[in-house]
Image (cartoon, rainbow, N blue to C red; front, side):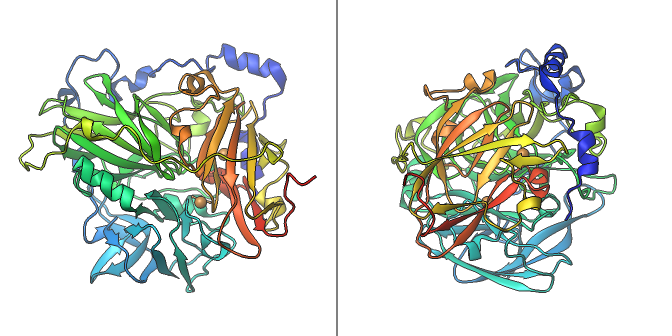
Length: 561
Ligand code: C2O
Ligand code: CU
Ligand code: CU
């Protein structure tokens, strides 16, 4: 049992009543909705009135070509056929100039080539078969994040793969086309193992997906690209640093597709980007910055695939583990210009103690890291002339509508309530539950095939929690009591943003918010299947902000009197 409460209590001082809140407000960390840019960071991102072209100011900032999934190596593009053997282990990779970086990763051989953390591509309905061998000296797993699987194939901490042992994952991919991912998920060590590198992407394709690609004229791996964005804490020897028992682990370097300081030579035209926030704890407010202004983009998909229609946006919040599918149009950008993919500053709302997000003691473990919520640039697109003659068809090719999503059908009586809060010891709880108290014993049972509404209330003295449900995608019904900047993004009278209208497996719940989600617990499996409900801030998860629930034919239906 490891709760780490000693270090927690210093970090997580609970606000004592309204007096402390008022003090906090006076201290200036109330949500303002303004795009504040701390003076010290002014040079790191384009301020709204910046006049100098981006290229002049940051010529040497993004120096390494973005890794594109290729036949071999890190993030190799692997079209899965038959079984793939993957070994969880550690090896050195050249990521930064100078010393190599030891990366924990899933290694395999595909078509005779060595691959590491491969991007797995599968067709909807196809069988995924991966045989995981653990060559680390601690237990690990491969969890198939977002996929509809049974407990045995979920790769959660319920079924750890011990050092030297193997486990075969085999299941039919029942999810819609979209970007999913796989990562290590051993109880108590998920934060460390993902920070050290154990994560890869998984792209599900289907007929609708292939038709859209053809219609847009964007070739996968050229102008239809995945972006796995993660921050890492890197020391002076180019090693990834992680502290056991850490809290909210943020890093001082950004890797996009395992590339540091990444740039992509881009032609003036459409790009489709499938973006994963692969950070342990960092929440992004993503935007494309060009000459100090924001280049709008179309949001077309979320965790569980395409939306019902595209939405034109200027920026978007993306919490840990969430994915978005966006189309950005560089055709208005002059050749020679640069466009930054940035995270704009936002109010981090780390309201759980009176320290505020920028306090030095919170940053002591993260030298050089940009504080949570402060602006930072993630990568750069350099506009070059299009010599390929492979043109996309332009923004007009983006369909006005995609296929309808599964309906939100849930009965009001089937309401389950959850409250996210800290206890007096500084432990994050889901209701009164915490993995370290409740272990693998399901804290509630859901009747298979039922449709439930889960109402998740985040305490006001809290912080944003990216809440994730294993095994099922869900839809949002409403957001209430949202912070102003979240409310400002609502496009429905139920408080939902365009992002919220998609199929999701992870939802960010801001302090004070009450969010209702609808989950259809239909599945083709039998017997008792146990899943996890947890915060995908990995340090919260590892500190027990995670519970086990069961899906079962015999469970009581909430609507039965
Ligand atoms: Cu991506 Cu339980 O996690
Ligand atoms: Cu998951
Ligand atoms: Cu959390």
